[in-house]
Image (cartoon, rainbow, N blue to C red; front, side):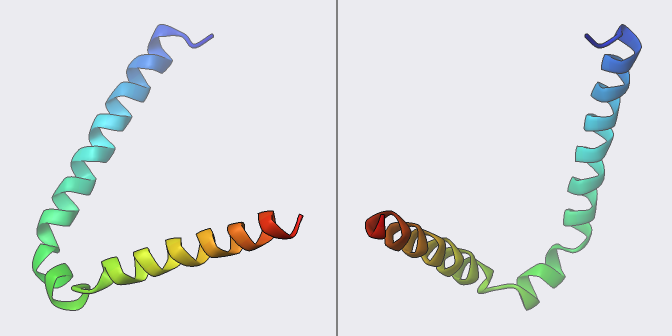
Amino acid sequence: MFSKGQLIFAAFFVIAFIMAMVWSYKKDIKIHKKYYKNAFIVLISTILIIIIFALITFSLH
């Protein structure tokens, strides 16, 4: 399905992408702690809203 060259490229790309993400996050960690300290509350509330809408939808059908 994929050639050997394509698989090697994909592996290098994934490794390079992950390394760039880690480097970028480490560089900005002080800013994240300062400005995004309650971001998990937004995540939890979004998940709860989606679950509530799904329960309402399934209960009405």
